[in-house]
Image (cartoon, rainbow, N blue to C red; front, side, top):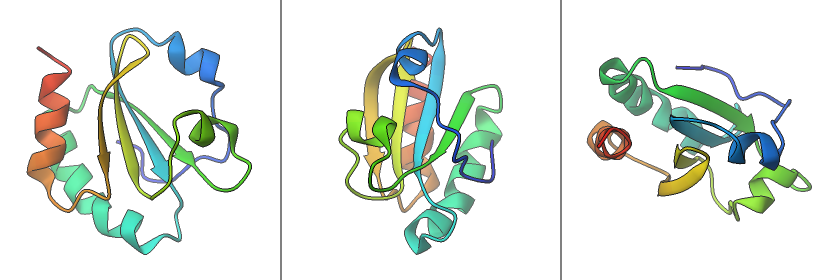
Length: 106
């Protein structure tokens, strides 16, 4: 699990070309909702430590977030082979994240 949001986002083409399960997380390090979600993410990742995690800083003019129509932070987008198969916005518990992670492995 990554701990900081990167300001170096992959391109949408890079995300679309991903193979296997992945979690694409949008937010910012200063966002209170994002900070509150981190313990829940850590718990969920304890069951899925191998899950590819891309943690991207979002904001006005950030193309990747706009391409996924991100409006609130954090937004978790669950991908399988580069395609969105699930989304959680402002998760408040580890179990909902864990269930979404599990769905990537079915």
